[in-house]
Length: 80
Image 1 (cartoon, rainbow, N blue to C red):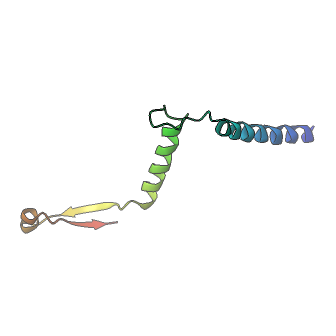
Image 2: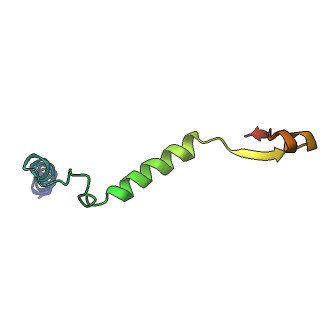
Image 3: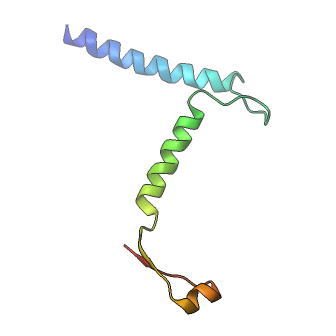
């Protein structure tokens, strides 16, 4: 019983991987500039962007200004 379930999972993963490979290998993927987006392209790009920015973005704690800084356009920020 357990061997059958494990075999089914392995064959399922191999089947999905083969389907993705054949999708790209047969030229079904949109590659033209004017082509529509690939399925979930925006979602995956947004996930990666938000993960990168959440990890590496500087967090501005406070923005201090002085009268001279307002005139010259120089701002002093403290980063977390």
